[in-house]
Image (cartoon, rainbow, N blue to C red; front, side):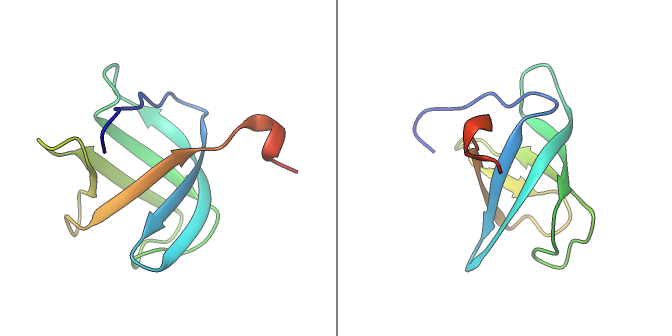
Length: 81
């Protein structure tokens, strides 16, 4: 992750792990955006319902349960139908 996006509570996201991609939203985020709890619209990496993530030293988000890389992209509210 080159440019660090700060995600806020309520943001809609595209959440990716390996070949899986689901949508979700930020349920709770720390003030600095480095740790979050995400609500999932579908199962991803064995997580059902919620996924907690933490930003590593390189600026990448990782699952707090498996430490696997999780890629997050903010979805423009106009793109949600």
